Length: 639
Image (tube, rainbow, N blue to C red; front, side, top):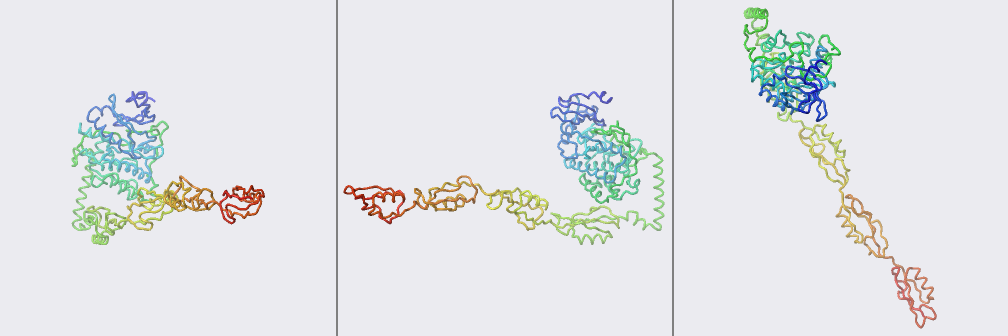
């Protein structure tokens, strides 16, 4: 609580937007606060650069530039940078607030990590750094304080823009470099230069610490530690942890090689190396940890709270220091060597002893020494890239080198030729050592799976699972295939094609919508033609008598307007009017004849002759036996 009360920024509103609510941590470059972004109503971490670092115009400009670059990084393993600003002599970064702790606090609490957890943590750090290196950013201050661990166990790297901006500006204005001496690469110490390989070195030193519980170099002063970085070699962790596998020693040595050219080129290459080592170890080795007692934090310890920035601790040299460039020269000088003189004298005695032994060996066993311990024990890996496998194997055999062969597909290297070697061409390898050959299997060919008649989602998932890239889907109407079902693929199922061939999938949109015309009253032939043209299928269901629609013409249809191609339209055709046979009513009484004709549907009219007094029919206008429609008028002549 005293920290909160004494800090003048607590409760302050920065840039009319960020309300500072608590101080999280204070490091060598900045102080980090928890703040509320009033505009977006979210909790953020506000990192305020120390005023003495921001005094110069150059450092402020660099800070702004690097902050913009860091903000472009989009990776789940990088603490996101939301905003950057300067106000009231404050230079600040607004960052993602990470709920959790940092790797330094985790180490303080647990002492060391199991081998598998240490390798996996470093692999995640390198994955985040690889994204930065691809974007042209170098961190320059990788250390446990800047590795955040969320409550869900995710690993995030913090402080990208700030570390580089402050370091470069300090070099430009004072000739000194800023950093954490325990993790500085030799080239940073000697000339202030740093590229991606400097971050790789720092990760290697950090891996050593995760495994052993302490930093690789110890010294009473930072300059002593810096001297060891330049003139020493990071010890093999197995010197303390006897059971540690050789692969881990070799990994630490590769990451912390003194010459940058001997390290992985960037974090991406280093991550691949770490992954290869981790996956080569068995579960027993991965679960083991050095016998270092854990140190649980007290309830009031800040280690259990939210840690958002570097924290200077009493464990080794973890704070940020300013070190003059060139303070540790590349050449050894007793006057400049900050290590105790007793150690120097001891080394000289050892060197003299080795020379004496060498001279004695040259008298009798010199050849043995040269070929088993000295330079003659090593040879260089020949350049076998592009050579046929058999030729490469023969070359290695001629040089008394063993080999192992891995094969992999390659789009560029023909089948049977060497893609790469490990160690690479020109690297030293013991004469009885082994060279790993990676041989091309040629272009990977894939067989297009049969996905026709499958639902679209299922078909696309099958193709992608087989390694194919799917082109944008073609969608067409289809009479027989339901909507959303695959009609065909190009290339066709069963074809063998390159793995990078795009597969075009044609998916049915179902039946095509059409408009059915009204064909009532039209002749059967014309109606059928009109329906065919529209995409419908005409079908005559029945023929009926009709008094007004001519025979063979459409009386009615079942569908008009909106329909789907191929739908059946049922038609009713006219048989014309119904005809009835006229009966013979000659000689019948008019009333009987009228009744009979009326009952058959005819209209009857009477025409009297001589007054029609007898009422007998003597003639009919439509002859008996004729067939005429109902309603026909029949005139009866009556006498």
